[in-house]
Amino acid sequence: MRFSANPIVPISLIVAALVFVLPSVAQQQTSPSDTDLPIEGILLRLQIHLWNYMANVPSFFCDEHVISDISQIRLTARSVANSGRTTTDSIFHLKRSDPGVVPVRLTEAREIKAVNNKPAQGEAITGPAIFSGAFSSGLNVVSLDLMPCYDYRVVPGQRLHHAPVLVIDYALKASVAANNNCPGPEAETGRAYIDPQTFQLLRIEMRTPNHELTPGSSTLTLWTWSVDYAPVTFDNKLFWMPKTIDSAVTANDGSTRWSFAATYRNYHKLNVTSRIVTTSDN
Image (cartoon, rainbow, N blue to C red; front, side, top):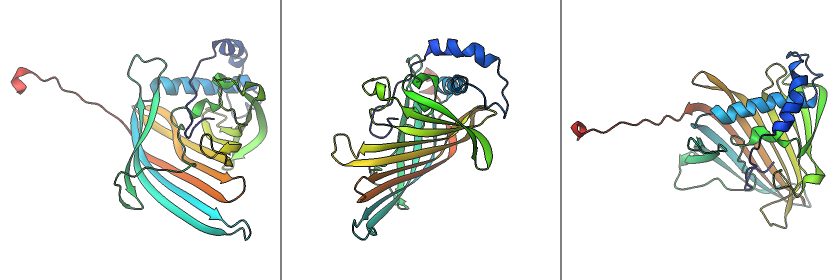
């Protein structure tokens, strides 16, 4: 999936796919034993959650705590030669596009408050392991939207935190490398963990080998990331939001490793208030 410095994949609804799978899905029972659902049925339920999220998630802000590390390694001794850690505390914002804008755009931003427990003075989070897009486009990695882009496979008998879950393995199709409507062109693979009762996405992982350190760079890396989701309520409506994000980039020659670990809490809806000014107010 294109997250970091790459453009966000736009959401396009695959109506034909929805019409195709809907009759068979309607005949299924939703229960923890519902592991025999066809992959289209699982993706349909995930797509419904995605549509609800895009249609209803409000602009909001929350606390973001990030620990970013860089480790430079001696290739001979295989020991850490130089390392640095930066801790950043920010207010993270997600903003909806103006009403009437189609398709809806969700824009991520952060206001850095402190770096290494000291007041920020214009600093920015930097490094190749920085992760963006989890709030604005992360949910569509496993969805009907991207069925033309990924091969999906259900993996039975899996557990997450000792509880049974539905698991989908996914891999970018080689045939879509030049398709601008799909992620890539790097060979992305990953796994999604889904609650079998609610069909909410609990966790998603991705692995991208031979990832360019920066666009156009000759340094190739292994990039891995994961997002864990938890329920958040706005105006009595339930949404599943990232709780933790972990991202790591390791140079293929083993010389350097960058990491990004973020936690999110204290979600608040962004309320915009206004007042009509009359002559008597002046």
